[in-house]
Length: 327
Image (tube, rainbow, N blue to C red; front, side, top):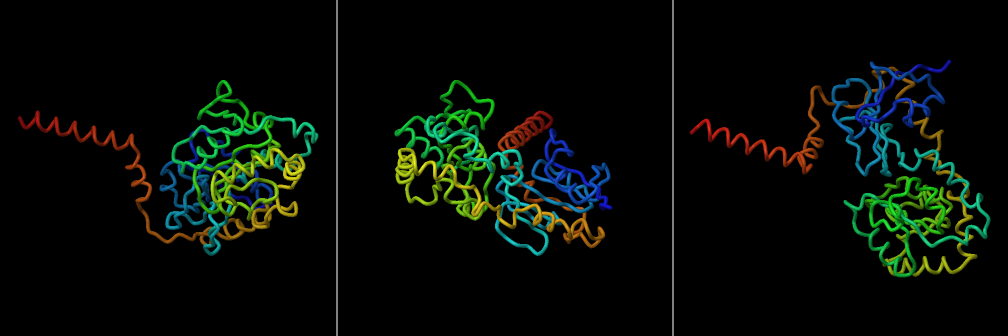
C-alpha cells in the first residue's frame, strides 16, 4: 500500500493546476498523492506570500536564479550545486520539462542526414531581452554578419511576427542560440534541451558548469571561447564542415548516454524520503518562531517600479490633504 500524503501548491500563479504541476504525477510513482485544501505539505515558489500562513512542511522550488532561504522553508529544490544536510536537492528547470526532454533524447534520429544538412543557418526565440548581461545580443549581432539568424520571438523579430511553436520553428535550422537570461553556475533552464529537441546544435551560454549535465560533444559551449569573435569562427567552421556537424548532431545529449546520477528519478525520490516517509514532526526542519515577516520579499517588492510609483503618489496625496486641512 502506498502511503497517502496531502499536498498542495502556493504562490505558483493563478493559472497553476495542482494536478498538472511536475511534483504531483512524479510523487504518485511512490505515494498516494491527495491534493488537499488542508495539506500537510506545500510546494511554494516566488509568486507571493500566501505560504507565510501555512504552518505545515514547506518545500520551496524555483525556476528563477534565486538561492533558497532556509529560514523560511523546510526543504528546497533549486539550480545551485550545493549541499545543506538533507534539506536541499538540485533540480534544474530543464529536468522538469519532460516533453522537451523526451524529444531531445531522440535528437538526430527523426531526420535523415541530408535533411539535417539542407536547412537554414540559425534560429533564436527571444522575448525577454531585459535583465541580461548583453552576451546574447552580442552573439546574435556577430553571427548575423556571417548569415541571417532568424529571430522568432518578440525581440528583433525578422520572420513576420512571433512564432506559435518554438520546436517546430527551430527544426528548420541547423543551429539554435540557447543563451540564458543570466549567468550562474548550475542555472540551466529549458533553452538547451528545447534546442536539442528541435534537432539543432545548441549554441549555449549561461551555466559555466553546463557540461556537468550535458555531453560537451553535442553542443557548442560559448564558455569554451575567450571572445565572441572566436565563438563565431567556430560556429562557421561547424556550419561549413558536414562531417563535423553530423558528428555533433548525432552525439547523445548526456555523457555515455546516461542522465547524471543526481538528476535521475531515483535520486529525486530518495530526497523526498525524509520528507514524506517520517512523521510530520520529524520532517520539520525550519526553526524560526511564528509570526514572521519575509524581509527579503518585502524589500524586493519595494524595488518594483510600479510599487515605488504608487508609494510616491500616496505620499503626495497625503501632503496635499495635510496642506488643505491645515490651511
